[in-house]
Length: 222
Image 1 (spheres, rainbow, N blue to C red):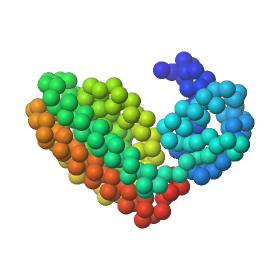
Image 2: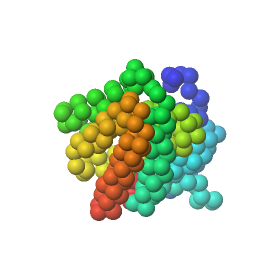
Image 3: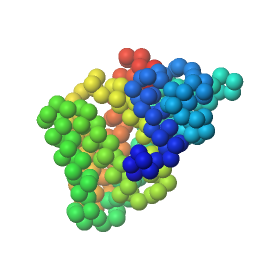
């Protein structure tokens, strides 16, 4: 969908999200709805619709008579998010392995892994993060459960914010790539137990790393 075909509220969602991720709208800061509308050079109606959408995604909250607050992201928040993701994505991996996909059906999953390997070889963690996100998104899609896709999608911004903050603090994610390849091979081979358990442990390991970094560095402002 091009920018020209986006509705006003969709453009407002994109713009507000970008300003939160860039830090222009810093976590913990408070803003009036009129202020945000002026900042985006938009009318209040699409901005209010965007605020409601982003509130549902955990990026901000509307407070009566106080306006909009950009939410901080605490270690406890991310622990809860990753607990949910672990269960839902592990189930998706199990369902994908049981679906009997041919190797040609898994090209997008395989390409994401190859891109992650290349990114590490090139010391490009931003490219690695992009490919990692594509892997998880495709895994959930292959699981075939639209409600899991919707819930995981709702949490994706929170995960992205935390990962952006800790990306250059964590160890080089070679183990993560190895886990992804094992999950891919298990789905290809119809090995349900390996797909489920490897992905479950993979997400729990990621949770441990991220939560420890958020707590150690007191990164509660993102």
